[in-house]
Image (cartoon, rainbow, N blue to C red; front, side, top):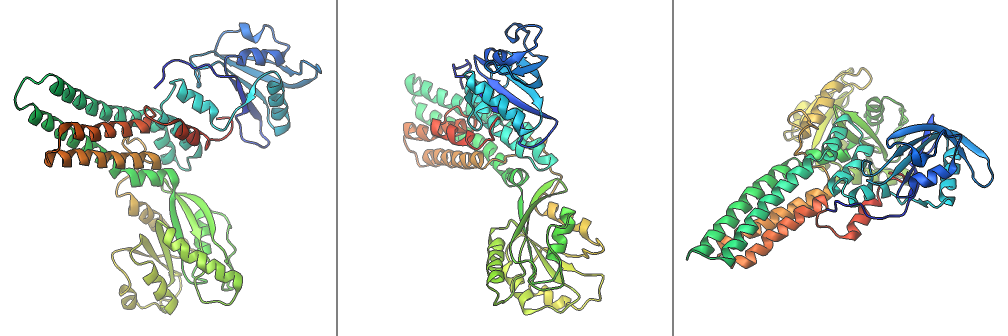
Amino acid sequence: MMNITKEFDTIAAISTPPGEGAISIVRLSGTEAVKIANQISHYQKKSLEEVPTHTIHYGHVKDPETKAVLDEVMFAVMRAPKTFTREDIVEINCHGGMVVANQILQLLLRQGARLAEPGEFTKRAFLNGRMDLSQAEAVMDLIQAKTDESMKLALNQLDGKLSHLIRELRQKILEALAQVEVNIDYPEYDDVEEMTSIILVNKAREVQQDVAHLLQTSRQGKILREGLSTAIIGRPNVGKSSLLNYLLQEDKAIVTEIAGTTRDVIEEYVNVRGVPLKLVDTAGIRETDDVVEKIGVERSRQAIVDADLILLILNQSEALTEMDKELLTLTKGKHRIVLLNKVDLPRKLEEGLLKEYLEEETVLPISVISSQGIDALEQAIKNTFFNQETSGKDATYLSNSRHIGLLEETNRALQEVIDGIEQEMPVDLVQIDMTRAWDLLGEIIGDSVQDELITQLFSQFCLGK
């Protein structure tokens, strides 16, 4: 990781979301940031180039050419290296609204700044050693967090807890590799190769155990980060859209007594006991001649395949139908919770017949209309994937797909080290796999990563961050 600031041109962008609001922020970063901001400042008691770092100053933005005053603003001046990018930064706090902010941005560009690329501020923070790659990725996770738990997870990663753990694992491998080199270059005993093999295999097993512990948390961490894809499945008019509306606390889906009202898949995010759910309300699965509804039914079937969790709703006030049986068979083997809706009505569903289609999944009686059983449903959703309380404070939670993939590769490389020693392969060949494990861990924090990957990762960031 680089620890000295690189020379870049000065970039500018609007850092606040588009739309009306009290304040918009236009951000500058680079060696010319303060100079450029000073060129458009007006009514200042002193030049912005003379003010102390990390201070904020009242003034106006004025076009140097037309002399027109654009807005009344506050200039926040922060000098390198104690800034987000480790460069000089000026943040212009202007009145909210896209017109004013855009005019100020265009004015800065005419004074010599360049429009920032998506994620370029965070990319500079990484390139200038302000943070490693896993911390930079946590910035976007924090912005996109949908629950308190996913926010805590991102904050822990941004705070460097994952980075610290990865660096410890790399250090363990490095110590083993250094000892191997010493034994090879300066052999003092006849059994030096045997000693070297013991060092490699013991260290590989130790690091592999730590990696396995991290990977054990990956499923829960990924759910907290990306959300749990949850499909609400059932035949028409069993209460799918009513359940979606209840969980969302808004009338997102149209609810009528007419079968086939929902003709397409509706997706919405909701926070259930700290777990973000991507709820998918599907069209009722049935045989139909309606062309549009038929497309919706096919999408519903695909939703079953793609879902992490199935909420299968049955109407307990009616006997089990052939379509109910088909859905019970279709969702068998998936993570599912079977909901017996409309318990406020007399029961007609045969319990013995239903048990023939069940395994060990949770079966809950509910009534969406009277809210009966909804609390138990929310707890069951959480318990399905989290046997204990979710803990964003747990520094070992792994949530990023890229990190998970690299750790799985690391685990395989370490296993190859162990297998190679057991098969009595030459130490120098086994050493290659150990070095590969060290490099793979380095890719997580950016110590060994290609420029193309860095560009791809930061291009996914929002403009102005």
